[in-house]
Amino acid sequence: MKDFICVQVRLDFHRQIKNLLQRDLYPFHFKQHNKHELRRNLHLIKISNLSKQYLDNMENNIVLRKDVNNIPAIRTLVKDISLRNDPLLCDKLEAELKKLPNLTHARLIQYGDKPCELLRYFPMISSSGLTEFSEICKRLNLFRMEHLGNITGHKSYYLISYLAMLEHALIEHAITFLRKNDFKLVSVPDILPAFLIEGCGMHTAPERTQVYTLKPNMCLSGTSEMALAGIFQDRLYKKKELPIKVCAVSRCFRAETSGSHEEKGIYRVHQFNKVEMFAVCTTSQSEEIINYFKNLEISLFKNLNLTFRLLDMPPPELGAPAYEKYDIESWMSGRKIWGEISSCSNCTDYQSKRLNITYLSSNKTKFVHTVNGTAAAIPRLLISLIESNQMKASSISVPNVLQKFIKQSDVKKEKRFPELKLAKRIKH
Image (cartoon, rainbow, N blue to C red; front, side):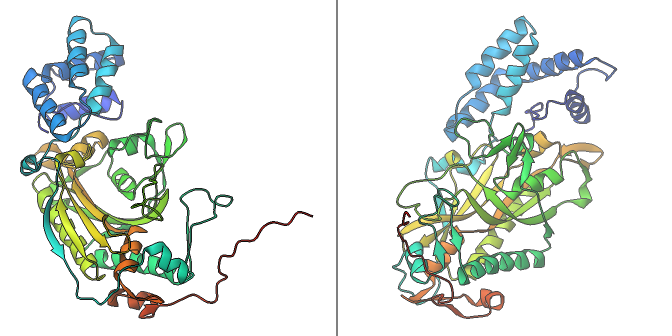
């Protein structure tokens, strides 16, 4: 977004002026100004760059993505500020500019509302594949989700014995694979400041949000992508240092769940484990990096004997940060649906502008591009794995790549762990 010069999430006006200077967009020599002058001059620059053509282009992009159209509000604020430079109006303009989504890759325009299927993979496995995950795992005494309201609340679960071992095997497999592909493993925090989450593109406002707020300005992380992005905040890199590829395992917390039949059980829950990939790169590298992430995901899932398809997602499915996005859906034979198990997104400079992540190229400062992708999202990957690798009503085949972590080739009923039995409480 070459002309989108002023959208910064942090209300740090000194740093914003510095960024504008670095990009040779500040219209006069930088001198000592007080805070109110900095605020006034910054918004004057914004107004001068919010041309009719720019706003028209952004409005067309919003309509294409079927997002909330706030361009009329921006036009009104620009007009009002040009008549009276009220600081409160300037703050409102700042807030509206932050809501604008990323641009959209040109190839996606023709898709409309439908994704484009690019690939479908069918493994050669023998499986009845008719039993839904929860049913077969309860039969094997590996899973608890019912009658937990007095213990852990709605949409919580226990993975027991071999199922818990499969969860850790999936994580270890993904990490081992990524480290062989030169990713650096990072252990990340789960509690993050709201500005970092918002800078990555998720809303923390109380109305219908996926984010758990712990206290003012602190939240539970919805994905380790946010914490990984935070490592690079306010950093300036040399071009030769990029790309940088990192990965993390973390708990992910989501406030919203679903009550639909297709998404029953552990398909959509309040917390889960996930292995995430993240990269910062130059503006010319992001297209190559997202294709690289996509191919890594395909390789991971082929090794797990999953039936899956690769989708190039249409504009309405991108979310605010993504310029382009690929989803991978696995056929979950027990529930007879295609369920998303992975995605990867090229966010170009959407996140780096908000978190001030830059690099030097030919003595000029540019914003990096960021790319993210999911290597293993548990428990959805467990659902697909169990439903795809059923051998009989009483056993599950373990894919070859996981056997070295779980130390066995199949999973049978757990007889050493007490089975769930309900009993009425007797009053004395």
